[in-house]
Image (cartoon, rainbow, N blue to C red; front, side):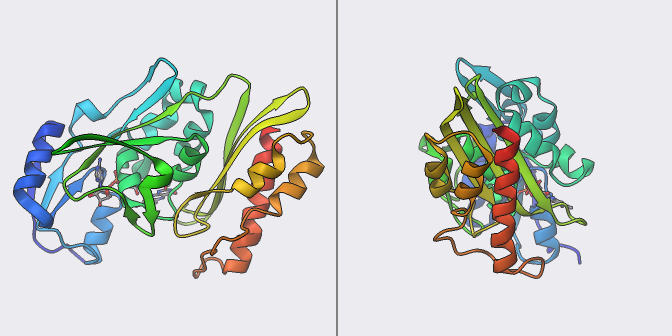
Length: 283
Ligand SMILES: Cc1cc2nc3c(=O)[nH]c(=O)nc-3n(C[C@H](O)[C@H](O)[C@H](O)COP(=O)(O)OP(=O)(O)OC[C@H]3O[C@@H](n4cnc5c(N)ncnc54)[C@H](O)[C@@H]3O)c2cc1C
């Protein structure tokens, strides 16, 4: 199917894009890599009258460290993130996650900002970013807001982003030098979308787990931190028995998704299997 007709606007700067958003009103949509929006438009799930293309805005396409903080511009593509030496050194699970997204065409066009604004429960980044305690920086007519990702993601394709705001950056503290992290994903073989994705960042001190952050994508309507797993790990001996006991709590209290790829029972089982794999890889 082809999309309904729309007017195309190319923004040169964030200020330009915000001005266009204000002028075009509710019928406008931001276009970044187009790898979620254009398919949705072709299926007529989305019929914006105006598209505001931000893909050429260089001021939001960057990856840099500022002090202890790793900053990823909303316009950074998945390939930029996978290949960044700053991300590889300071948040390796994020580089690993980016490299597992889709195929080269998707990775060369799709962006960090697009993934977070779209809030697809199957998107990979949210698990890694939740495990990294990331924050989302948005800009709107009233200025800048910084929102913890956990509060930014509200539900299925739903975020705290207002219609007149744009995501400009994602930031997180660089991982401590003694922490190890990974993202492990069971993927749908054709699209490579996650059926279950698990991110883990763990610090082990003298044989004991001193810190653990575990988060899932594609298990529930929004990505989430598995705090019961984390609490079962912290302070315990870094052993296979500890891991096996902890992952039993992976989906406690979670309404697990069911779709034509995986029933909720199977997906819940996979969540435990992938949490175990992720934790074994880092401990
Ligand atoms: C074949 C295929 C396979 C894929 N596989 C995976 C996968 O394995 N894992 C995965 O995580 N994803 C996957 N994706 C999705 C891909 O990562 C998309 O790139 C991503 O979901 C959206 O990013 P985008 O830049 O293309 O956004 P767009 O499609 O341009 O926009 C998506 C939405 O975000 C809004 N938006 C975009 N940027 C901003 C911004 N800065 N501020 C505010 N709103 C904004 C748009 O208005 C739109 O509503 C796949 C896509 C395809 C087509």
